[in-house]
Length: 156
Image (tube, helix red, strand yellow):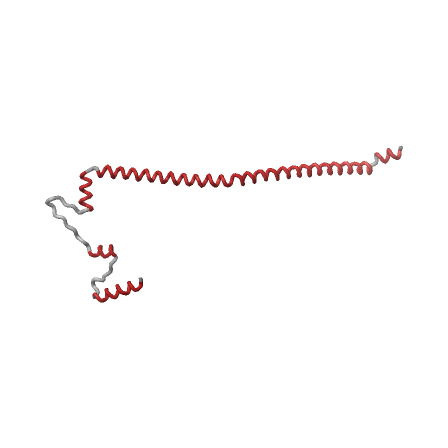
């Protein structure tokens, strides 16, 4: 027994036992960490699956919600414009109830004159040409205008 006790308390034996115990602890620790990692990986995968499912499930309704909100905003804008136009028409109707306003419009747009007044209309030839799109065809001989008309008819 003395040799066994001596062997049991020798430094080499103690170091070997200590190394084996440390290796066993490290192995147990690594296996626990791997178990934890595998559980976390499964949980993470399940969580990722749930999140992806929610994103896919909510994507279309959110798109519809946003587009409907845009449509509502457009319709509100159109309703506001219609209300403003209605108000303008009411104002115009109220103005047309006034005889002085109607007389002024008749004088401006229809060139009416009151009894005893003389009405004049001045026509600016340049303004007429610009409005009708005519060119200086009046200065050319008649046969040039005739051939231009034939040429333009031929192109059409």
